[in-house]
Image (tube, rainbow, N blue to C red; front, side, top):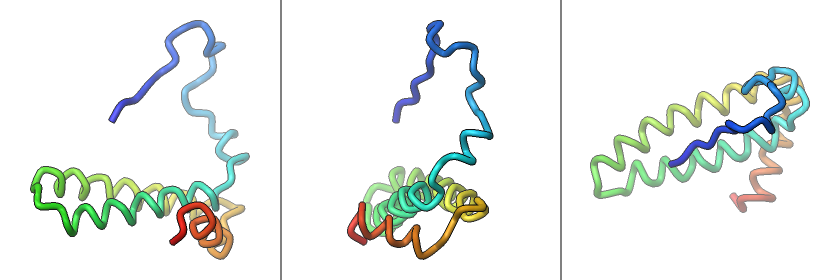
Length: 92
């Protein structure tokens, strides 16, 4: 996994985390994305023969659950819409 950060002057001195941008995001779509990731990680955790991969998947499952619960607290979150997005984009 790689993480990239803007280090040039193109960042325009903005903070890395802007809580006001979170309010503008679609929580249902974001939840669906993390829900799909959670599903894949559970599959890896349950079926991988590699113990190191299982350990890593277990750590990432906790992160995905934390992210899903974050979006569930968003004012605009609706489970029915989130499930619709998950079905539409991830066919599950």
